[in-house]
Image 1: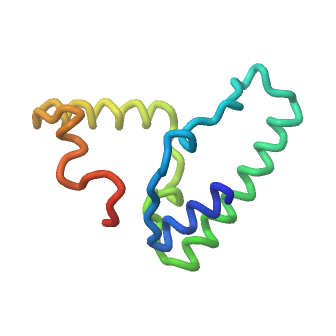
Image 2 (image 1 turned 90 degrees about the vertical axis):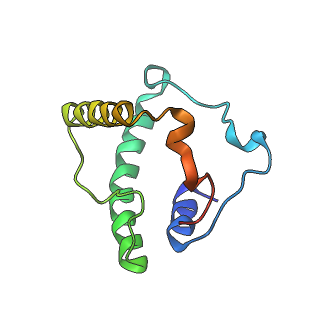
Length: 109
């Protein structure tokens, strides 16, 4: 099963449970410097395919739960948003446990 399969199932409303931590580890992770040049070219092609895929999934389900169709933010905009979120969480007094809160993890919303 590919990541795109998993994403489409998520959008369709499927819920997932990890049965063992074995499936949460990927020993083949690489850093960008150690990758061969062909791999970065392949990643760039795959990113283009993924842009089309996101639109197709949205057309099929009329949902974008991870907000992946929104325009990309610049690194500066991302940093500002993170600072605002940290400030808001500090003002309300939420810690890490409070941030997870009542919604829980792994539930369908």
